[in-house]
Length: 260
Image (cartoon, rainbow, N blue to C red; front, side, top):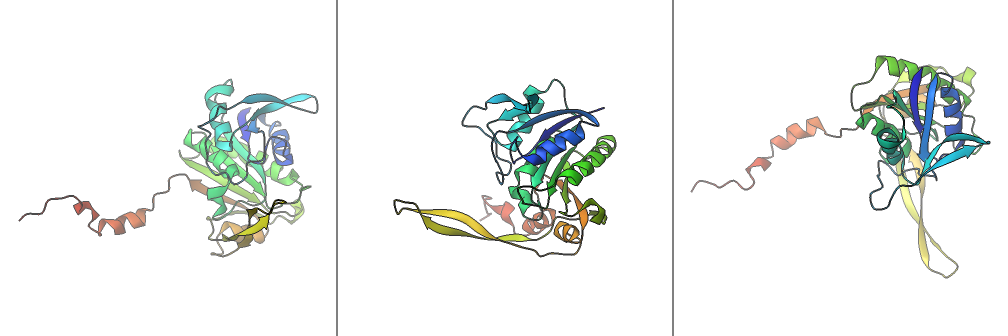
């Protein structure tokens, strides 16, 4: 039986995490440690200036897990280092409302929850459903995560690598299969809409549209084609090719004394 830590960024009351925890409990011991409020798009933020508070969360009269007044990365780090009775075999973050693909990976709290697991050396999976509707059906996404979890736990992942999983919002019978896809090149064409409060003071609300682009091998294309997308990603951000270019710039000569 696996020992699984479950977290998310949509908050501990999100239907996505409820569906995920229920499905995973069929294959192991599940500990839920999640933010007490919505924390989407917080990236890999950690809480350092205020104390973290942890409370038991009751759902339908039963203990569901712990809620934390922090970010997804806080929840995973605190769970592993202080809250859990033993180290988990696996971290599963989700199920997120909406796809997490392309540039969204750097903003996503769901992905960052799994990334923190990878930082701690635990095989980790981030799971998202391509559906923003309030009454989205997380059943298939939860079933897929339950199928994938023991495979990842058995085979393991290299340190620092996690799997980013995106599930199309279609009936399970319409899923065409699984694609191992690269992170895409789609981006958000953002703007800040200016509005005014009742006192006439301006405030700004982030809005925009998602522009899909990139190769057919990308995560966005896989989802749009009806496939579950799985992308292995690493938290190390070094661009090796650019390092080679910068070597030729002669920057290492800074501060060197020239011979007269």
